[in-house]
Image (cartoon, rainbow, N blue to C red; front, side, top):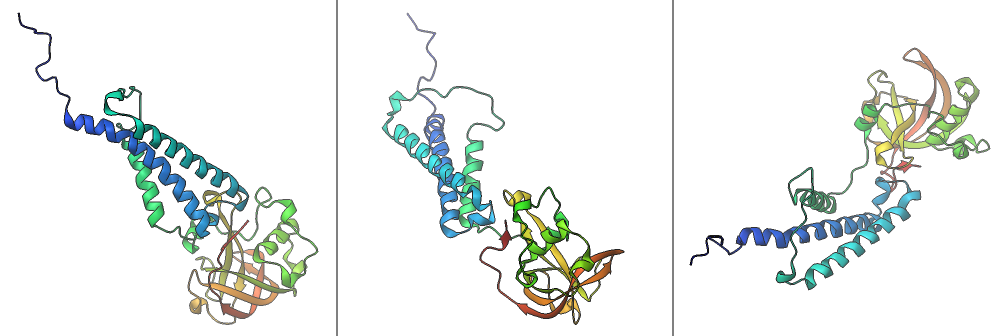
Length: 264
């Protein structure tokens, strides 16, 4: 009597068996890698290039949670013997099995090897430079009316203008601010734009804010993305057909990029 119901090859496909063993580990390493990545950014001081400091605790707790889940899952897989392996349940996915985890693991590895870059002038031009922070962006509690003019930061000046936008009200006031150089195409060579990026939640919503600077010479001496400390006084200039508060620079000094280049 022959048993025709038996398959011709009862041995499982070695490649398929290996794939089934490795697939769960790919998920584990992707989870652990993202936890390590977030903690690395926090320890190295690079997390402030990505999110607002108010949300650091949430990111750190999330990273610790990922590590706990990843190591717990790794322990489960380590204790599982091949004969105890259960078939993976079938479910709908956007990518073929394992691709999603592979993409997440690849992104985490790239994050571990590539340092986040600070936004520069081209990003500011792409996102739209403005000398006024809109009321929906500038929080009222950030405005300090009693601060001395020469002690205001660049963003303090922008927020002050947002409250009272008449430029003549500030004419003659001393100013000492820091920021990076932008060269908007509509400004002449005797002007540059000094700006800082403001983050309200994360880098995705960062926007540039700053003021035009009237130079004692041409702007060719100050390449884009150069960080400057500018001292001078406020004047009113008509730029692109609009009256704008402008810094008449008496002194421009090159400075290194701040450890934390963003404003919150």
